[in-house]
Image (cartoon, rainbow, N blue to C red; front, side, top):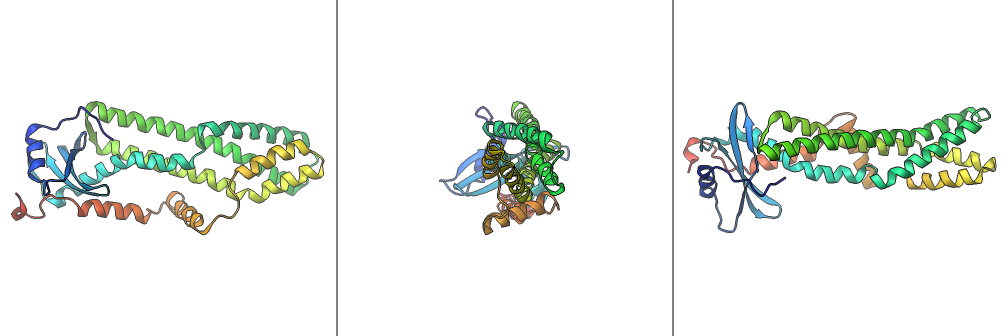
Length: 275
């Protein structure tokens, strides 16, 4: 998240430069004033390497508050910066625009076949057919919701960048949008994994009935979806996602990320530490 025309107040920039510890540090200022508890703040970052940053929070009046007073402010910025990272992360998990056509086509095939054969279907195959149909239905619904969330989140980001001000309310909204995107991606994967055996049962039934073309179309679709079992690493990711989006247990990597940011705040710990 950045804008090229953002310039902090001169007295704030002077303090930012004052807290620079190494000549090789690349200094930047978050491109928006942060509103917190009625006050305005700026956050400076000191880039030592591609993965090592330190932070300084400065009040609008030019004061450098104690570290314990600004920890929450640093986390507001962390959430805003991580938005693009999370967007990329969940974007890979969600069904893409170009593949939605496959979902729509497969849904039409399933509905047509089911309508024609439902009167003669055995009970177990009937249930499997309905669960197979749920795959494209749920996937398309989550895709629609994801697009709505992405649009809303981007509108907030553009609003923040245009007025160069961000507050807790906007941060909380973006947090919820990011959570929703992850949940939709998980739900898409979950329905595919849970219906693996149902899909095989439907395709086997169609082959026995001599419905070769329909069986072939759905077999291709079946191979394109998630299998029932996944690699151990993917299984751990799946269980972690379930804990986060269904049980709503905060993942450990989020907790560690916050702790890492707080540990790198350069604001003085006590009055005696002020420069």
